[in-house]
Amino acid sequence: MNSLTTPQAALREQAASLRLHGLLEHWGEVMAQPEQASWVAQMLAWEAAERSRRSLERRLRDAHIGRFKPLVDFDWAWPKSIDRSAVEELMTLAFVK
Picture 1 (cartoon, rainbow, N blue to C red):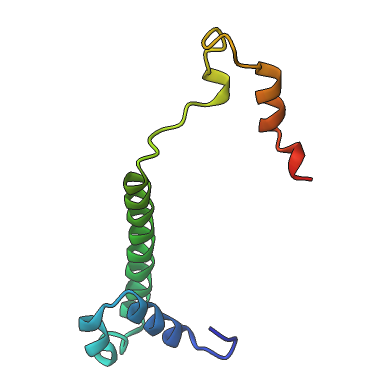
Picture 2 (picture 1 turned 135 degrees about the vertical axis):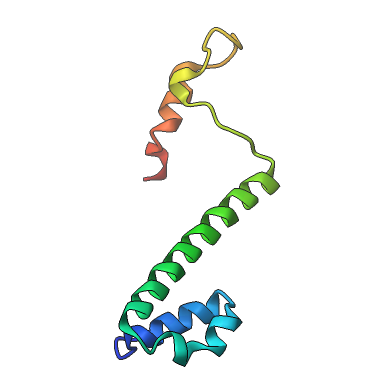
């Protein structure tokens, strides 16, 4: 979206990206009144946020990676062969530099 795009055009693009074809079909009627335009903007923001949240949840579920335990809650007594200082050093990500 470039800087010349009007707010109403940006909303229309967002509605199109969300595939809200019914809203797009009646765009002129809906956007004729300023209070409806602000209502549409809020609804589009909510819809985009909810779809994004649900998409993330679905991808995490499909990845089967489960929940992660924070390092602070890790039981260092088991397994006995783990090198705690090496793990903590790796978690600093200093090697990335």
